[in-house]
Amino acid sequence: MGCVLGPITRAQGKGLTILDIAALIAFLITAARVAMGLLPRLVTRFSPRGLLAFGWLVGAAVFALTFLIGGLLVLLPLMCALNGAFGLTPLIGLTLEHYNTVWVDREFWRNFLTSLKVTVGVVTISLTFGTLAGYALARSGSTLVLDGSDQTMVPAIAGYFNRETTTTDQVQADAAAVSITAPLFLLVMTFQRQIVSGLTAGAVKG
Image 1 (cartoon, rainbow, N blue to C red):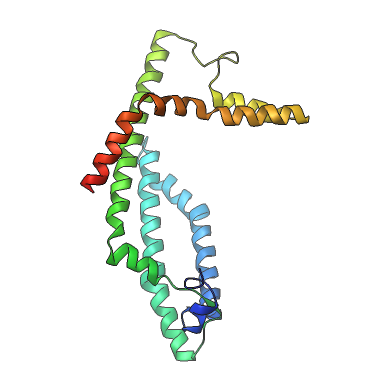
Image 2 (image 1 turned 135 degrees about the horizontal axis):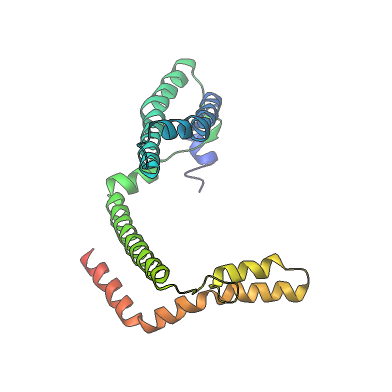
């Protein structure tokens, strides 16, 4: 950790000067104000009728891109020039060269994109089947998991913690929270052969 953030890095002349820290704080405060104030107003104003979610998706993408460009292509070179002009020395050691080596030189970004694709695929499939299941339940008139006597584990656990008053209640709430892993454990035990085969195939392919 000393080679990333600490006296070793500072001794090498790599880090944040007092000017860098002030500029970073101002940049983050400005970005937070835009994200919580200006961005919602712009999204609400310019989103097509009935497509507010799409407007938020575009707005978030534009904000993230602007944040990265402003930080990496504008603020960082400007601070380097100002620090050099004023002869400022680092106050706090900080360097990201090791992350640059991993992500760029060793192309770790490819692994990240692969993981992102898998995550998007899993979430898409889960949302698709969840939506279809909800639609089927609604059309069938079923009251499954819609009343207090037939809940899923999450709201039931929340109920345990909400009524926690004694040591016994706390222990019961903890036991319920641990028990939420039971369905996942059963699924893993049932499909462990398929999971191991998939992981092995993915590792060999990668």
